[in-house]
Structure formats: structure tokens, C-alpha cells
Image (cartoon, rainbow, N blue to C red; front, side, top):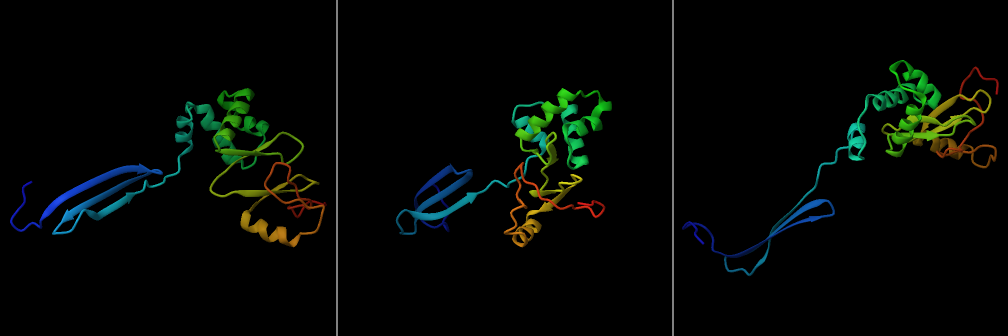
Length: 186
């Protein structure tokens, strides 16, 4: 081993690289300046997490990115809460048939890009997930739907505790009586 005249005495070294729980680990042990082999330096490199786009999710799951899938997802995002029939009416002029809408909604739901809920006794309602989970309040009279954040529902759930006619939650069967619109008579 060659070294300059001013370099410190270096006797031995051992490097270790590894991939542990998704992180790249590095350790270097060194024996130098009269000291035995001991830990000298180590590092842990973490991958910067970046959420996948819907296009990347489709590709990684082995599905093709088609114009029909893009239009159906776009319709769900634009409509907010929509049944398959409402999505079909929104994309109908693009040469997309109803069975394609149903198949695409099912695929997007499986991939976690949209979620379905049974807000009424009709067909399921689909909505884009977005950044935050939300809950649905549904009027039993006029069937209007109000989306409420988790923070908002926490205070509401406490204030209605003990009233058996009110059910609060995010599951498909969750419904709350009392209208969210001021024009409804219920």
C-alpha cells in the first residue's frame, strides 16, 4: 500500500455494503494510528418517497394506459361523486360503452385510485381518493351527499353519541339522517 509522507498510518480496513429494509447501508471499519480495527464511519441512504401517479400505478400493475381509462378517471374526478351511469353520461360522446365504464371503474377501484361507496340503495357511487380520506353524510329524504373530513366528523360523532338513529363512519353502509341542504324539508 502506498501513502504520502504526511498520511496517517493505516493498517487495515473493512467495508460492508447492504440493502436493509429498503435502505442502502454502508459501514467502514478501520485500524489506524495504533488503534485496532474499529468502527470508523457508517451511513444509511434512504430513498426519497414519491407517490406514484395514476399512470405509474397502472403500468406497474401490468395494465395499459388507455384513453378510455384516462377519460373515466377524469370524469370521476370532475363529477366528485358519481354512479357508473353518471360517469357513462359524462364520457358517452368519446365512443366509450357502458361495459367499458364498469370494467374501468372496477380496475381503478382495485388499484386504489378511486373508491366506491353505497350511499343510496341505487348503484354504487365512485369518488376519487385525493389526498385525504373523507366521510359521507347522506340525507334520507332528498339523498344529497355531504363530504366531511376526518377532523370534522370527529367533533360531530362526539356530539351525536347516544342517538341510536345516527350512524357515523366511512364504510359503504354508513348513512346519517338529517339534510345537509337548507332547501330540503326532511
